[in-house]
Length: 175
Image (cartoon, rainbow, N blue to C red):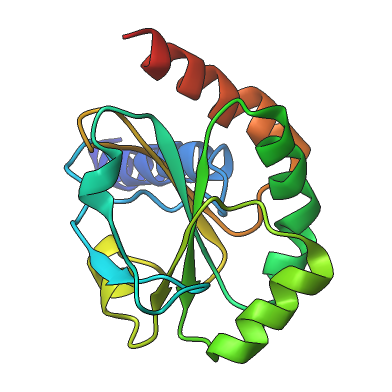
């Protein structure tokens, strides 16, 4: 009887881990930066390379930072959602053009619309590395104190905006 107890115990533990693992969303990769200060950046703007855009300009505001690129198919998928969110005026969305060609990025925004009041250019990808970007698109919710409160890996959709981002933004704006 005792010789079966150890294998049975191991089996029960493995089944428990498997059961928990099956309930997790594989698209949700936990970010070590959520709950920590967003990395500072100061980069040239896409539309006017002579001007610099700095994350410090947004202290005291709740905002979204969206990493995107003209070569990114997922960015095209999420773009109508960003346009709708920007038109709602619920929260400002700032763009981070990631490892892209300036002229292609400008043409892309002219063609599909521009949801960003300002877009910074992360040509080298250094800011993306600091933010832990796995690939574009990625979107961050940043609070008034400059702390990352949420990270969306992959394209935003209406469901994510309605159920996760907007409720969080409203909560953070009320604080």
